[in-house]
Amino acid sequence: MEQSVKTTLILQKLIRDVAEKLQDRPRVAQMFENCIRNTLETTIKRMPDGTTFVITGDIPAMWLRDSAAQVRPYLLLASEDREISDMIRGLIEQQFQQILHDPYANAFNESGNGKGHQTDLTAMSPWIWERKYEIDSLCYPMQLSYLLWKNGGRTDQFNDTFVKGVRAILSLWRTEQHHETRSPYLFQRLNCPATDTLPREGKGAVTGYTGMTWSGFRPSDDACKYGYLIPSNMFAIVVLRYLEEISRDVLGDEKLGKEAEMLREEISFGIISHGKVVHPRFGEIYAYETDGLDGHVLMDDANVPSLLAIPYLGYCAPDDPVYLNTRRFLLSEENPYFYRGLAAEGIGSPHTPKYYIWHIALAIQGLTATVQEEKERFLDVMARTDAGKGMMHEGFHKDDPGVYSREWFSWANMMFCELVLDVCGMKVRI
View 1 (cartoon, one colour):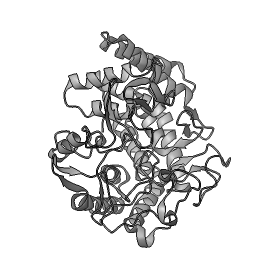
View 2 (cartoon, one colour):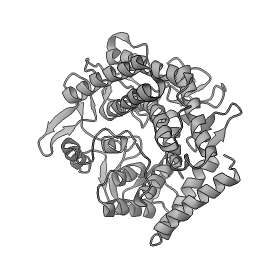
View 3 (cartoon, one colour):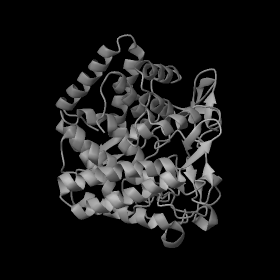
């Protein structure tokens, strides 16, 4: 993205402010500058129609989830700089246009160029890079719209595109409460790992009604084992609460707000009734997934929304008793994707090789910590596991940060930036 003189100066001031607050951590300050500049300069493109297209980094496509997370730290500048604010506003418009094109898709092309996974057995179009349905893909644009209002002070993102988009989301989430009987969604990918496709000829594992809404895939783009992904349903509750507030205070649409409230209450009941288990060591904890038929997956994935991240998302307080029990479980070897090694310890993902810790998960562990010293500790861990690249990776080996996936990863870079800003006392208002 080309920057005006004003935007350049405002960004430079933020970089100087961080460097001043981190005088004892000059390398961290330099990495912050690398990351905050890299995303703005290499992944963000303003389009002729005023919208914004954001590539995920080393893939020339835009993920609804990643793009929202990639611009989140810039919200701190949105009230000072109209160009930054317009960039985020343009992304929101692009996101909701994409949702209206197909609310089941997770990633889109810049044009109808037919790139991506066009041979998947699902209702593809040339505009869609990938059509893995994930609840969080619909949560993130709603969240970003709300955060621009609260941090940037503007409401013109709540236009006709937004209203049509959220109505499409509410309709889809209602449909997917009854996935077995009402859903039109099928997804199959041939000649691929099991995590890239859904069983039962694309329908997914059998589920029972819970009140929660179904998801085909996790925010890692890996297939759900069971269809009710608990952290994503928690995220849906948060953004439905946002929609209630937007409907009341901005749109003046009582009916839309009531629809959001009713759906939120049903999903919440589903989590309370089906999303918890009593662990013999840790007590009452949240499951990662359930099928509504007494099947549960006990784990966490580095990708957000995750169980570790639910206070960061705004679902609960960091000192919530069930969350604290869950956190202790997640940060133990009882979680099959928690790794402890010579270089670091933290949560990884079945999306990457065994023993790979993710920088996103380390950032979330720091952002959900309640003690400043712990936040700083995770900042230092992230800085020393960059393999000398000055930016974040996807995952790295627990014993050797020089063994990693993805040379740089924009989502992880911006999570690092957000933790830096948090340590410096600058937080995005949620």
